[in-house]
Image 1: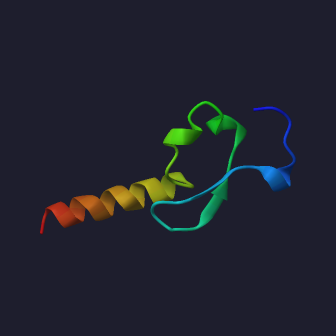
Image 2 (image 1 turned 90 degrees about the vertical axis):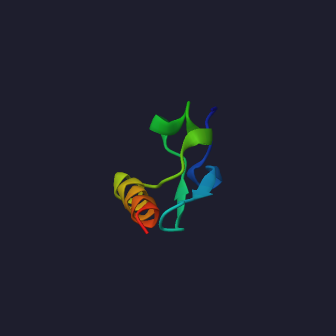
Length: 55
């Protein structure tokens, strides 16, 4: 990714909390695979799916 101003960074919606989050340098190579804004949301989503399987 070339130099982009902060206002023009790509944005996605978190699959767990539904809040928007912006692109980060550490996600540069895997941006298409990023679904969650944080580790907390990733863990929360996994807990809710495993709870649904037990019903």
